Image (cartoon, rainbow, N blue to C red):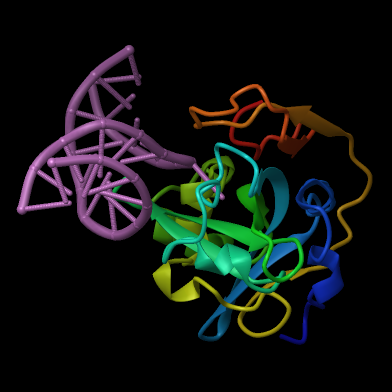
Length: 193
DNA sequence: TAAGTGATAGTT
DNA sequence: ACTATCACTTAG
């Protein structure tokens, strides 16, 4: 991956809320075969061990084990019989924490994303956690992979200045009032404004 | 607004 | 084994 420079491990080795905010404007990149699929992260949500909405709130299981591992890895899970969602693992080794990536503004490989999503409208390619995984070809095989090297990375990107909005998380039934969702103000690729 | 989809985790 | 639940998406 010569074109983009991955964020270093220490970027993830800190509080989940901090990482959730700092991931806005960074580039999620998946190299599949010869082509590069990528998009700017415009919406995130934080999940921590002491958080009732978090998969790790009731301890370590086979599914959530990656969240307890080293920061900077991908926690990919399957949900609602159809969809995958991707998180970046945060916090130090042994402490569960992750940031759900909820929406991307497509950058590289738009044609390929349109094919994968069977949609032409660019604003509908990756404006949701399941949609962005389908657009970038992220699935079970990507669970546990290292985001600081290899074919699936998060890279620095010059997105320019923006304002951040803090809001309650979406699609959960616990801790529904915690303002742990962050997004780029006014951005048309955000799942819900 | 509601149905679909199947893995997961907790309970028998 | 059984079942409720689920960090979602799409069509209508």
